[in-house]
Image (cartoon, rainbow, N blue to C red; front, side):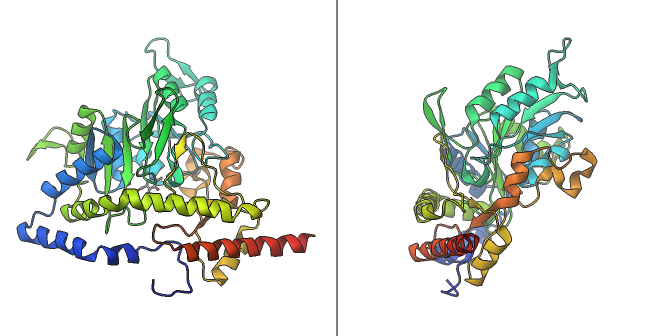
Length: 403
Ligand SMILES: *Cc1c(COP(=O)(O)O)cnc(C)c1O
């Protein structure tokens, strides 16, 4: 840690210093055969990551955004098809929908879990859509567009409530692609199957990002798709490589979306530490819960629903007076973030979709109050206590002014 008095929002330096020798060995290995794209290091990582996620297949790609876009293409999205997701997520979720030719539809999130509210999904599918009597397909009543699929986002490291989402998907014959970009190793308890399941093993496919700040991060750009569906895996392998199943034989137009072998090698090194890192994130989160309990009137800590074992990609609290709160922490050298301040339906990029303030009230309320506190595996107990103490101090100062 460079400056002992500062507590960064995220520390990416320490883990790379800790693993430097192993990471450098990967580079040497790549230099020894100059196989920089694809090859054995990519295949090895794909096998390891599929196993980590409890999925049959993993396909390494260039980013989480690629994984989402390729998943939609491989799932057979046709121009104009609607894909339903939440407005409280990173824009990559919806960029991928549009770029695959789809139309974005939103349903609101659940206030406690920050993830897709299955009841809102049900309401959308049952009151705003209708079955086409000829084709049997589900159409949005207003636009007459076909509903193709659903993208629950496992935000902040907590899974969405998958049982009811999967049940609705099955009822209406829709695909489910998990956006697991923040949820490497997160678990969901399926009441239906009476068992814990891993993020990335529940939908038709799932997208993971290895952007450096994610729970498993590359040293650059990288991502992966996981699936239990062999045809899906094969199709995405083709899409990531210019649509070729065999060199220079292009069955379809694809993308340049492959995973570099050095990144794959680095990811394999880090994957061996991921379970331990996730455990330390969970321990930090549970201690934060305890330390912040006395400030609970003014600071709402994240709720871990009984059906999830979260991996705390972020530790997100809610406060009324966010600007002052962040300023007070910044003054004490404590970094914070906001994930995300502007709901997607109110972004300039989506002006043409004609959404308005009030369309998704839970998302809007949450977006105006959330703050992400420092969270990373290498954070020390002392740093954690200092963050919590500063939060409590802010709250008691504020309450004493009110009284
Ligand atoms: C990071 C992220 C993505 C995109 O991943 P990239 O690797 O940056 O393309 C998509 N969805 C969510 C929820 C993310 O957090």
